[in-house]
Image 1 (tube, rainbow, N blue to C red):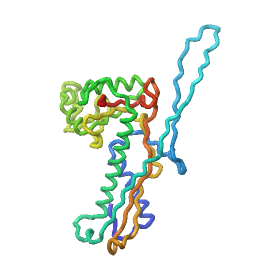
Image 2 (image 1 turned 90 degrees about the vertical axis):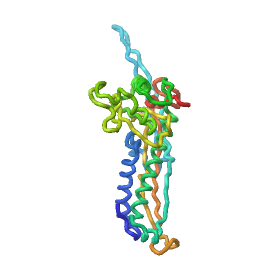
Image 3 (image 1 turned 180 degrees about the horizontal axis):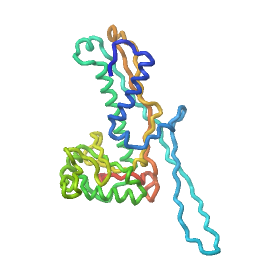
Image 4 (image 1 turned 180 degrees about the vertical axis):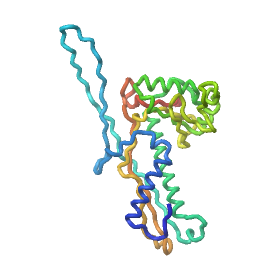
Length: 281
C-alpha cells in the first residue's frame, strides 16, 4: 500500500484500515483458525457471553410407563473485550527523503505484522490457560502425542474437521524427523511434501514462532474464540514538532480472546473440553 506525505482523508483512512485488518488476519497464524465471534462484540459491551448446556440422556421407556423428564441447566463462558492493542510512530520527513524505500508504507506493514503477532501471542496464552494436558508426558512432539490428543479430543466430542495442531518452529523440526510422515510407503503420499507440513491424520498443522519451544496445542476451533469489537484502525495527524511534513500514526484495535466449553465433558472447571496441550509444566 502506498501512503503519501500528506495527512490522510477520512475516506482514504477507512480504506487503508480495512486493508490493514485483512492483512492482520492473513499474517496471523492462529486468528483465522479459531472461532470468530466479532458479530457479537457490539458497541457498549465490555464482555460477550456464550451459553453452554448439558447433554440429554436417552432412556429406554417401558411399555405403558411415563417417559422420564429431564431438566438441563445452562451456564456461560464470558469473554472480556479487554485487549486494547496500540502502536504509535512518527515519520520524520528527513528520513523519508533520505530513504530508498517507501518509509510510510513499510512502517504500516511492520505495525500490522506486530499486531498480528500480538494476536497470536494472546491466543496461545489462552490455549495454555484452558488446555487439558495430554496423557503423553513428552516435551518433544511425536506420533504418539499427536494420536493421543486426537483421541482425547474426539472422546470429548470434538469435531475432527475442526481440529488444528499449533506448534513452534522447533516442534516443526522434530516432526520433519518422524519417518512415517516423510515416507511415501506409509500413506501413499507424504505428509511432509516440499519441506512443508500439511495435514497430520487430517489435522492442519500451524507453525508459529509465538509458541516457545516445547509447547504445542491441538484444539477444536469451537474451543477458543476471538472477537474484534473494533477492527484494526489506522489514523494520523500532522506532527510539525518533528519537522515540516512529519506525521504521527496510530494503529490500534480492541478485542477479546476466550476458551470455550469450559468444564464440559468431565474436564476441570477452568479447562476447555476442546483444547489439548503438551504435558510440560
